[in-house]
Length: 304
Image (cartoon, rainbow, N blue to C red; front, side, top):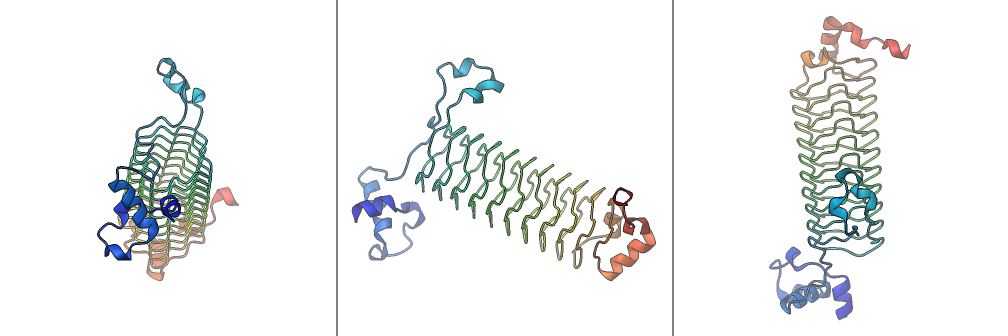
């Protein structure tokens, strides 16, 4: 029973003071008891160099250093509640790893492989996830504020209610990702591939979506206040009841886009788009488009 409580343990910081001592489960009590005795049952990689670096690492040209790093093999490891703050995990193999509730703030996970890993409620503030493989990963309610996810692969990733404010997602692949109610306020999604993703009720205020691919993406009820959608592709995208107040739509492709019930969308914004061919608009806005810029409703020449 003691072993079970340690292996399946829940960090005491998540329940301490929430209920009477007799109400705790064994997996809650054992880690707490060990901590009182001066022991930590959870993995501690805080500020550790987990991946192997050569002795002459500091003398190697900065742009070539990653080639000499040997990534740590942590595939399938149970690292729930682990303290990995500022850990060096470059090129680490963390496929199928249990990292739920782990502390990974400021960790360097550049080019690591976290495919199918469980990072639910993990803390990754200012983490370096550049070119990291996060395909089919579970990041539900994870905190990735200021994280660098540039060129990362998040294809099919599960990120409902994740916090990605001010995160760098430039050129990131989010094809088919689930981001319902995620907060991407002020995030950089320039040139990102977000096709077929679910961003229903997501927060994207002041986000940079310039040239982003959003074809067939679900943005229903999403908040895009002051978002930059210049040159973004929104073919057959669902923007029903989304808030586009002061959003930049210059040269955006709205071919077949559903704009029914969109809030705070003006004719001035629509007049600057590249095309509205086959787009669905509320009757009053459609009438204004027909009077102001009917050419936008015509079939684009590059599709003839």
